[in-house]
Length: 104
Image 1 (spheres, helix red, strand yellow):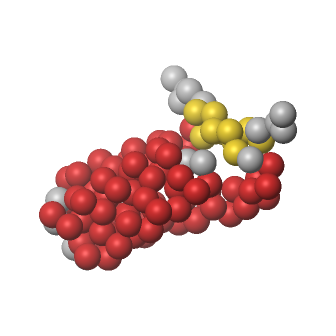
Image 2 (cartoon, rainbow, N blue to C red):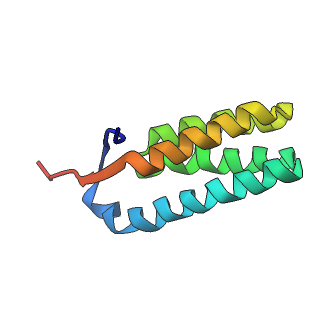
């Protein structure tokens, strides 16, 4: 069974930046997995904080929400929560489709 696409509308002014933004989040997934293996919860918290701050600016509130939750889980040292949130991020990135918002 395939994953249902999640459509995110972005402004034309930032459309060229989106592929790199999403690729960086895919790299974050790998970094999160590595940091969990190493038990580096402070770094996980900082990475989540950065995701929280950047996601909404690019129109990806789901990434901001996940980042906030990773930040909090990292601060608690909650390995299970971070792992689950990483899977949520990975699933979102696999399903997201970007549409450029048409000017009115």
